[in-house]
Image (cartoon, rainbow, N blue to C red; front, side):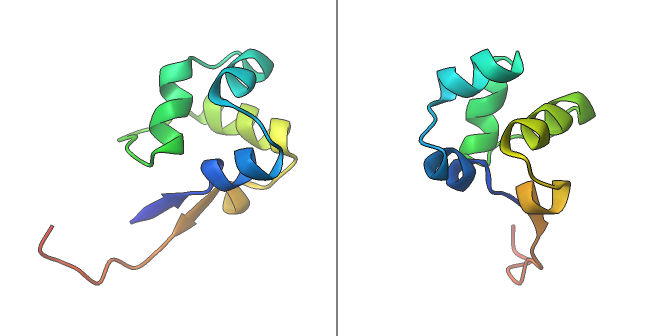
Length: 72
């Protein structure tokens, strides 16, 4: 499973979804899906803009976690 740390980063920077949308040019829905970790896919451009905004590497925005519950 891929975990997205956007909610943590936004909290650390005290940013709302609309703030991130304005600063990156990304659609609010894209940010909301990533924030709630419900996105099925993400454009590389979106990842790049988020990494730029928060000054992080891709590995700090996303993390691979071994899914031990195989019933899903």
